[in-house]
Image 1 (tube, helix red, strand yellow):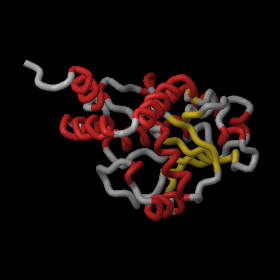
Image 2 (cartoon, rainbow, N blue to C red):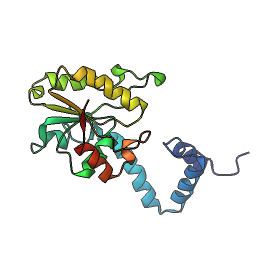
Image 3 (cartoon, one colour):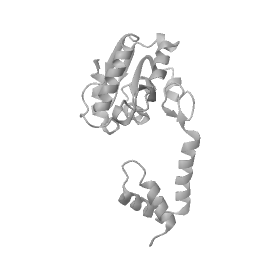
Image 4 (cartoon, rainbow, N blue to C red):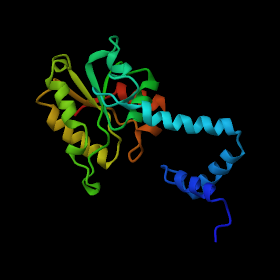
Length: 202
């Protein structure tokens, strides 16, 4: 028998599907929302709905954006000779917070993981190669590989390095300033800034 509200249970179940949120945390969040004013909860629901309607992937770099191409790709002040390749859009946000990198980005949408059935065809590898072989490709002198320092990230780095060496003048990777086994999004700005400055040739 259900001793609580079916609506509350549904929200708890939905929240618990989010990354890093277990049932206990989902329950606390649901009960917190229950105490908030109706207009605040409605504003949150509206923001979530707007996210799906307005946010999409940039057709050039695959970063998240509301404008296509995204503001970074359109910014003529950026160094168009350097492209930093990352796994996810949140990696772009982390690197941008360092204020060290002034080039362009390319978001792969993940990393190679044969155990999970993720191969090169599941990532934005073809799109990266198309950028380098198109009109813009003539400008690109360096590709920085900024993958997470784990097994999947290392495999992706080595795979891309082999592909890119015949096409681009310089292929580098961010320096080993980030602990092995951690994710890029959890690195602090100072560590990530040093890692970008100390990148090495692959």
